[in-house]
Length: 361
Ligand code: NAD
Image (cartoon, rainbow, N blue to C red; front, side, top):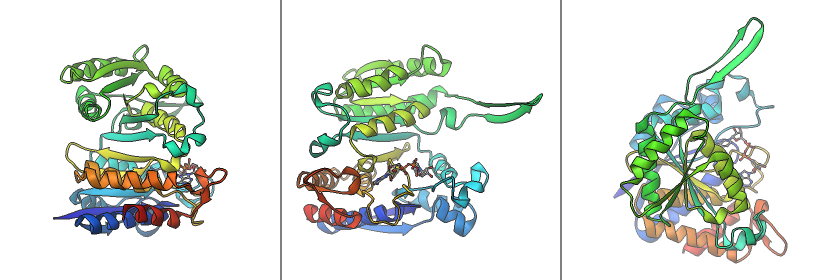
C-alpha cells in the first residue's frame, strides 16, 4: 500500500530539518517494506514569494488528499523580513493558522520527554522531578482566543482593542476524548488545566471534561488552574502524564514544558482531526538566527516523522525504531550545537540525520 505524505518544509531551518526527516522516512520504508510517495508544497514566506499568499487553495486541497503532512516551520525575523510589512492575515504564520483550520486539526499533541542522556541540560534539579519527565500536552487548537472576534478601534482619541475567548461544548468534548484516549495508552492520568475561578469558558470546559471522564473510569482526572500549573511544571514536573488545556494556555505551557527537556530542538508535535489524518511538525519555529548554517537540530523534525508513523499510519514498531535510534545516538554522546555539553561530540544537522539512520539500520 502506498501512503501519500505531503512535505511542507517552509522557511528558515525548515528545509534543512525536513530533508533529514525525509531521509529517515526513506530508511524506514526500505527496511520495513513500505511505499511512501511525497509531494513538496510551499507554505509561509516561501509561498508568499511565489504566489503572494502564505497558503494557496491548491496546497490546501493537496494536503487534504494526503495521509499526513510533515511540516518544517514558517516565519522569519519580523524586524527585517519584508513578509512582516504585509497585513497580518497575509503573513507567513497566517498560512499555518489557515492550514490548521482548513484541515480541522483541533487537537495538538506536544510531548515533553527528558532523554536520560540530556539530564544535564534540564534546568530543573533531579531532586524536583524524582522519577522522570515524560508528559504529553494536548492543546485545543482551533478555538478560543486565537480564533475569536477581535478588533482595534479609536474612540474619542483613545486606542482600544479586544479579543474574545469562546468555546462550545462540542469543541471541548472532541479534544477531551483525544486526551483521554491518549492517557489510556500512557499512565492513565489527565490534568485538565483552566482558569475556572475567573472565566466562564473555563467553567464550561470543566463541566464538559467531567462528563467525558465518566466514559474513562480507569483514568484519574484532576483539575488545575493555569497559574498553578505553570508553577507545578517547574516544581514537580514528574507528576504529569497528560495535560489537557485550551488553545492559549496550551501554547504557553507547552513552550514552558519544552524547556524541561533542555532544547526546543528536541520536541516534535502532532495535530490531529477526527480521522487518522495529521499534521506533524517540530515544536520550534523557523530559527532564522541559525538558518543555512547546518547547525540546526533535526531531532524534533525526525521525531515528528515518528509521530506521523504512529498516529496517522498506525506503524508503532517503525515509530519506536526511530525513537530508540534517537536515544542511542544521544547515549553515544553525539550532540548538535543547541544541546552540546562538555566531552560530547559536536555534529551538524546532516551528520545527526545520518547517525540516526545508521542506528535504525
Ligand atoms: P524559534 O523556535 O524559531 O527559535 C527560538 C530559539 O531556539 C532560537 O535561538 C533558535 O535558534 C533556537 N532553535 C529553534 N529550533 C532549533 C533547532 N531545531 N535547533 C537548534 N536551535 C533551535 O522561535 P522564534 O525565534 O521566536 O521565532 C522565529 C520565527 O519562527 C518567527 O517568525 C515565528 O513567528 C516563527 N514560528 C513559527 C512556528 C511554526 O512554524 N510552527 C512556531 C514558532 C515560531
